[in-house]
Length: 287
Length: 141
Image (cartoon, rainbow over all chains, first blue to last red; front, top):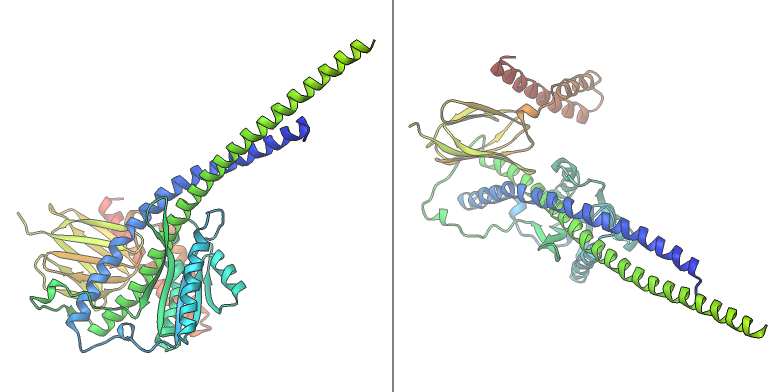
């Protein structure tokens, strides 16, 4: 049995760890709120663009932008959004699992997969698996800006325009609520423009300046960028929520551990006193 | 009462302005456009410059945009801005610095790519400065 002093040191060190985890929990909770606000703030932009694109696609059936054309899939581009830091439970692992499953499916279907990673965890994971990573951004911080993701997205968009990839997917975590985050694999390109809208009933069209093609080019590029940006922001909210939950569990576990150690310490102390007493008593009776 | 319409100015990062206005003036790619209520549907890219909204009662507000898209419906105008900052938040010193940097980059014209970026940066910096000067004038400083 460990001596009293050893147990005391151990209790102290667990207490210190507990302090850190509970501080991290509180930080994550406040950051999560801000991340959720940011998530809500970036939504109207994507919604507006989606509405305009849906209208454009219906009003101009004669012009089909390459981003809207389905073609046989030989190569797939995947943008994987992960966190920069760990200590957030199984968040990244679950998402990588979803990503790897999707990759496997495409490989079996005979398609190559190229990756672009956002966040350093994704980079280190997929580098280890040996998958080709064509572009990478990381260390975006808690308040990423759109311009941070433009580079990564552009690499993929160019690859799509040049026919190097035939489909673009994004893998990220969807924020369901604080307790649950769901890995998502979403198709970005080609954009399926089905959603029949009521606007079609009374037919009207925009005036385009300078022309429909240029307007559509700009819109589609911004649409993809904003979708990726939204994925990044959502992933941050997920990261904070997952970290909060993980740190809460860690704090609780540390508490249990301290209780157990305290009990062991008390027992050891009690045993030492009893032993000492019996030694004194037996010593006295011997005299 | 004058006719009004709804205006949304949104960037990918946040919603900037949303409200009822009498007129919107925006720097469209083919030249500045002023939009009144019941304008026909219009879709056009924007260049760097300022979006001006005239609120009921004649009060004006300025928003700087680095570019973007303008969508007009008879009673709703949407500005999809690339990066919108509140004009009052614009840092004049930063704009000057960016301009100086861009001009310097223009002077040693080494690669085509650098030249194009510098030109874009310069246009943006000048537009920012104009917005600030206008605001100054308005505030009577």
